[in-house]
Image (cartoon, rainbow, N blue to C red; front, side, top):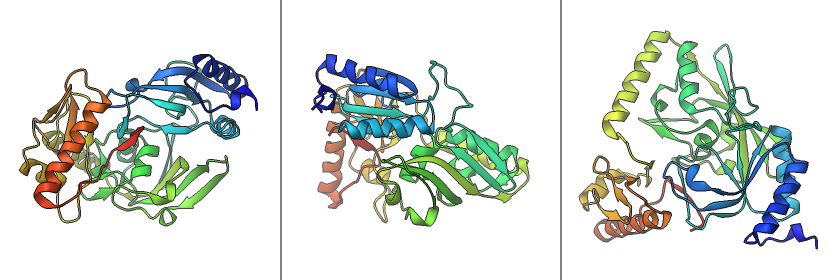
Length: 324
């Protein structure tokens, strides 16, 4: 067995060797032992053994093949707004589609960050910031996504968890998705094949979103802009965040609102190390100091226990967790 085929990535010299192999065979940028705290909205998370920005779709396919051949675990990351990574980090290869050039600046013309409008159809690459897409719908007099305004994150991540707000989901007007299987095969699938649900997208498991196309309707730009402004104002009124956070921690159980359940058990202000439940929103945990992922998980478990004890309800995470 070649030494690069080993799964043990605790050896820094080995990781450096693998990184050199990636750099010679995959177009893009590869970093070793990259702190994931710089790539998540919680600002926590240990290092990724390998952190790679593939320079395009072909590079992404080659990188997946590289990792598969060497039995390296992979993690696709977007803007990290719904992600809690353990303090131990990730002993594998993190693949970031948000930056796809060899430079530190993020390019709006990269293969994963583009928006195209054709009639009432708007198409966006996985790396597009959701709010940028929504503003483009307004500029082009298209309606159907205004209630998603202000949700942090990109198109790829938003599709993978079917993000939504105010009764609207990102999948509502989805026409089709371009996805890549982990073996590098590219497919186009309709939204109905994904079986979207509340904060779930089962059909996207072990698949990478490359592009999403939405079928919208015509509306006056001033009307669309007004609804967007009203949505953002309401969002800011409900959950103004000035500290690192990942938004809602728990899903709403059927028939209940998680925030109300948490309020009723005195969640606001509860602390664990350097993190605490927001005083403004009982379903938000904020990093109020030098909080760690372990602090956040400890607080999550305490909150779950309080709600279960009082209501016999088990809160489920809206967050995606890595390394727990």
